[in-house]
Image 1 (cartoon, one colour):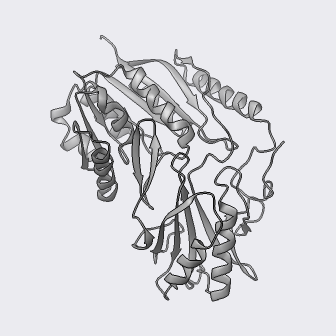
Image 2 (cartoon, one colour; image 1 turned 90 degrees about the horizontal axis):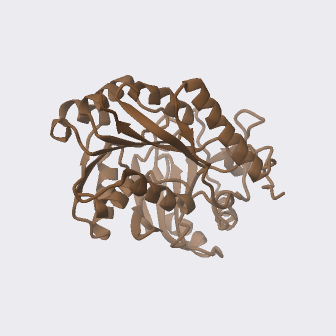
Image 3 (tube, helix red, strand yellow; image 1 turned 90 degrees about the vertical axis):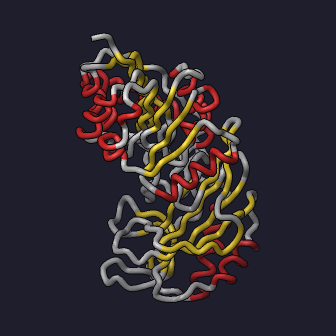
Length: 383
């Protein structure tokens, strides 16, 4: 059985020591248990899956000073320790050379590493994104603003790395926030384009350094096509995409729909969504910046009784206020997908007063981890 050299210490994967067939069976059993506990009459479709290796298109790594500068993922065994990563079998084959080049660069420069307790230091994170169908790479180094980065040196050492894919974009991100999360306070494009491009089905999507994009491109095109098929979308139906991100689901539905409106909370992400519709020559879709709850309460009246509502919420799921507002909107059909099955089955019964779902279909977007995506179609019932 193939396992990463860091498995057992790195906290990124949990199940590489279990055969993939067993992983899939366990995930199906988990959904069966959630269905049973929800007391809903709903069918479980077989779990959908693809190649479980080198599937991720983005990783964020942390810098640490552990006698030498290391760059990697936090240990699952030792709190606060960063495992100095050399490879990642669920991400990119180019990662080994990228990490080698970056660590050589920061060690030669003798940069300080940010300490979250003293709030001092320079290096914070490394972001690497790759595409699975267009073979492009984007790299971003995240630091505080306490000193300057040798921009030319950073670009040069990455250009010299022997990679299979092409580096199309290099960023320097300055983050002086207190949060451990990567906050994109200031973005400096050091090399190449602002975006990399991925091809899903017949569509091209731009991906920024801070864009949300489904993590497993090898599976997501088929996932989106199932959404098109299950909703039976046609040119007399209007679609509202409530958490639209960079517009990928709405764009997949748009060729067969009458119109699509995407709602997203971030101006920057909406700008990317608009550009994605433009480069795909789609004219019946538009995007607006709004918080989902505020939109439903203050701007949704023209969309009451809409034909199709798409909800793909954050991992936390739907709040009670959003659920109530969706029911007031009274869509004829709800396409509901979630990356958190527990939240999905927590929220699903709240719609049972007005809707029914024939099935739930799991998708293993995250092999070797406990996570998966769920998809269901809720249809309005006659009261």
